[in-house]
Amino acid sequence: LPAFILFPHKVSMLINLGSLCILASFGALKGFYNFIVNDLLSRKNILMSVGYFLSIFMSIYASLVMKSYLLTISTLLVEGMFLIYYICSFFPGG
Image 1 (tube, helix red, strand yellow):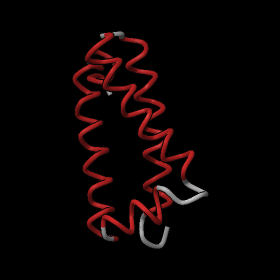
Image 2: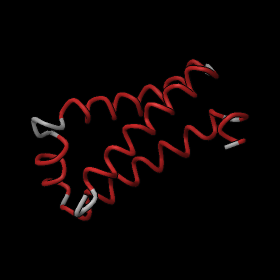
Image 3: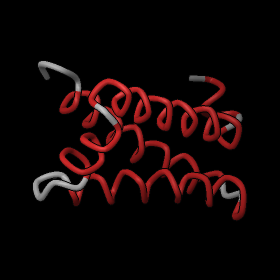
């Protein structure tokens, strides 16, 4: 938590890498084609998927391009909420 407050730009890259690893693990678990087509692009999850990938992109943009402290922290919080949603909804039995 102190690193999140003191160095949000560095933490942003670690969280984004972790998010992509979690998505890759769900893809490996369910099959990449089935995960992308049936889960991420389904009618009920398309808005959440777009929001999640947009939050990842905005987090990278805010930390690397804009170098904005407050925008980086806010995009990381939004990305964390989407990540918790995906872990709860796509985890087997969840």
